[in-house]
Image (cartoon, rainbow, N blue to C red; front, side, top):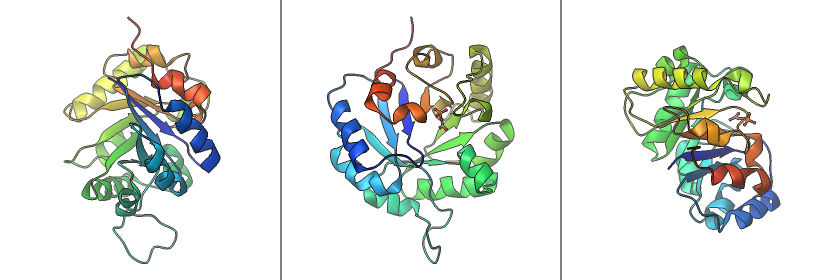
Amino acid sequence: MKIIAGNWKMNGDAAALDALLTEMQNIKTDNKIILCLPATLISQATGQAGRIAIGGQDCSAHSAGAFTGEISAAQLADAGAKYVIVGHSERRSAHGETNEIVREKAQRAIESGLTPIICVSDMAQVDGSIPDTGDIIIAFEPVSAIGTGCVPAADDIAKMHRVIAQRTGGRCPILYGGSVKGANVCEIIGIDKVDGVLVGGASLTSDDFIPISICKVNQ
Ligand code: PGA
């Protein structure tokens, strides 16, 4: 069983979600599938998703209060989410999120009963962004691989995943993210210490996401 997580980013609408979930209804796989959606689609998705778990893409570092435009982890949970991505490199670079902020967000998610999918691209982010306790998922996403089609060599992915597993005491699944497609997913999930993948562009349509969702490790 591998974890296949989709990240729609700021894409999609109710019709696109309906189309994807309808097509995915009858897929057969042991993989754990998670779809991280724009917050506007979470309630619709949880009513329709069946065995697919739903997540948000970010949450506030605060619990509640006067933070116009922000969404709390508790509100995502209330809408039916079970997971939330925090610390994605697009948030770190475009919104100035530090390791400290990312750790706070992960903490709020854990307190609200969500499992944070904490994105990291280097060891400083591993050391700084991950709360000491609580159920988490880590996603190793090299910035150079996101949306570029450039996936690192299998040995390099294995090395990073081994180091992250050592540094975190093997306490959680570690996903690889960055240019995962139907054509490369079986090889990637077969790499040592890769527990699954976080998929951006190729999670938007059933044509792309179903082959990834049902993938099996290459023998
Ligand atoms: P990509 O994005 O699959 O489109 O490269 C991955 C991500 O940003 O999580």
